[in-house]
Structures are given as C-alpha cells and as structure tokens.
Image (tube, rainbow, N blue to C red; front, side, top):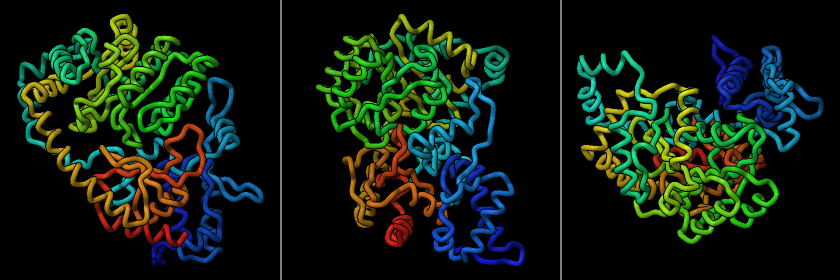
Length: 472
C-alpha cells in the first residue's frame, strides 16, 4: 500500500514507481499497464489517483494511451538499419503475440538495479555469499607480483586465451569424457560471449536456428537481436522433440541447434543417451552443428550424458563458464570446437574483444589446478541440495506443483495463475520473479514460473505469494 507523506503525494509515488520500472525495463516496451480500476485496488488508492499518475507518465513520454485499450509502455523510436524504427518493431511484436511485462534483459538488469533487499526468486545465479572464498583472492595475489603484473598488463594476452588455463581446461573436460586438446579451446568473456561467437561465425541474419522451448530467455533475445529466425523445439524430459526437429530440417535446413543438455534451464531436464544418439544422427544427416551449453556443469553429475562426449567434437561445439559457480565479475568462459572451426571462431573473437584478461585466466587456472574449484563446487552442491528440499516443501505448501522433477538450481513451477500479472504484483512487494512467458519464443500467458532454489527457501516469500495468488 502507498502512504501519503508531506514530501510526496500518492499520485507522485505511484507515478515514480511505474517510471522506475519502465526505465529499468522491469516493464518492457509494449507492456500494458494495469487498468485504472485494477491498479487502484492493488495499491489501495482511488481511481482518480491512478488516472493522475498515468497522466504524469504520459507527460513524461513513458507511456501511451490507446483508445478503449488502456495504457502501454512506450518504445522510444530509434532508427534501424532495415529502415524500421524500434517503435514499429514493437508494434509488430505486439501484433504477433504481445509483450511480457518482464523481459529477458529485465532479469539481467535486476542483478544490478535491486528492486529491494529481499531475495529474488527470478534470478539465475547463486547469492554472492554462497560464492565467497579465500582461495580466489589468494590466487589473484599469487599471479600478480610486480613483474607479472607488468608483463601481463603492458601487452595483449594470447589470442586463444591463457595457455595454462586452456591446458587445465583440457584436463577438466577429459573428466567429463569430452576430449579436447588445448589448441581446440578458446577462452571468452563469459559463456554468453562464447555463444555469441559461435552464432556470429556460423550464421547470418535471417538464418533459421533451432532452440529449445521452454528455453533460456536471454538466448531467445540474443538470437533475435542478431536477426536470426528462431525455430522453437519442444524440450521433453529425455531431450528435444526429434520429430519437430526433423520437420524443421526438411523445410528450413537450419545450420545450428542450441541445447542445454544437462540441468536444462528452466526445467532441470537431463538428456538421455538414446535421445542424444538419435539427435547426433539427425545432425549428421541434415548437416547442422550443435552448440552444447554446459553452464551448469559444476553442479551436475560428471556421468550425465553430454552430446560433445558422444560426438567427439565433430558436429558439436562445447560452451561453459565460471560465472555461476565462482566469480561472475571475472567474466571467464570458454568454448571447445572441432579443429576446422577453431580459426574462424578465433577470428570472430578477435573482432569482438581482441583478447581476454590473462591475469584472471591465470588465477582461475591455479584455482582449478590445485583442486580448490572442485572442493568449492562440492560445498555448493551440498548446500544447494538442502536449499532445494526446503524450497520444494514451501512451494508445495503454497499450492504449487512442479512441471518437472526438481533438480539442479531451478524449479519449473506451476502456480495455477497468470504469472505475468503476478510478476508485477510481486514487484510491489519487492520480489522479482521469472514468469513462464519469458521462456517461450512466442510470448503467451503462462501459469508457470522459474524459481531459484537458493532464493526461495524463505517462508516470507511464499506467504506473500500465497496472499497475492488468492487475491487474484
């Protein structure tokens, strides 16, 4: 509820609340604001107060009114290379299915623009206190002596990435039965950069790309921004729907398929060996590459089925990183590629970032080589198992069900209500959630949401959730 103060009227408070969300993209361009009556009920104010607040947003150019339809977040018009303004693009997107109130980049922005000090169930990362360690700063100190600091800082690093890290990564991959020599590994600025390098190397604007659905919201947005045509492949418990993929191959001849084989985001599914074999046969028959994003490898079983292990880096490209488990701000990721693709992928890396930071790569190599990362990951897994058990119990108690077996970092939860609408109401209470519509290429209302088990062990969140769910 809003409370009138001498410094700020209820109208001003409500307008500021919506303006902050619009500017931080927690309300995406094209999103519809609540109706006047609905907004008045949610915030405990009069309809006239809502009308006045919306008028202020109109005056600031943040929203636009559409006759008989309501108020919508405005897209600021900017020129586009294809001749269409971004406002025109937003209109086209609305016509094709509408915009979700919270979009992919809003979740990323939420990591930096805190809506409150409360835990955020929609976040895709471990809380900072889970990642704290003494070995990381010690490793940095060890590799940054005066001479080393000058040697590293006064010249660019190795184009492929620090050789000691690539050697250690080769050994680490071998433990997963992924056999990649150091000269087939390229370090990147995080795993997302690795995915971007692959896309920019193998694809051109307009090319069709097969992506799992539900899938990683940021990957949909990233590929769309590059002008790719997204072909959503339903993700099942054992793997992708191969019949759908086969039809895509016959009609569209896609060059690439992007997959999270192990602890799939958001469902937690793991690829079965049988599905993996059939998928690789399809790739060979129709001549497309597979990018295997193994971002959650540090919390996953080593014996889990990985396409790259079965394929031997022929049609597969392996991608992973360390932001989830160790040091988000170090921005260290990597890819392992077939020999014929190494040079083209390296060219793309050099065009985007030149090289990557050798000092931190050398420090990471030390953390891996001395077994500290492995022991750290074991502690994280133990703590995550306990958090997951508590979170699942609370979710079930709040009347939710799980659309997939709860494993890994994320739960794919069926709430029974429209989670797009719920997301904005939860924001009023200081909680950022990830509505199910985010994880689909074609936006549509969904009763699902993705929860982070580390940030949903708090009973206070589920009490607020239950109250808002019951009040409709």
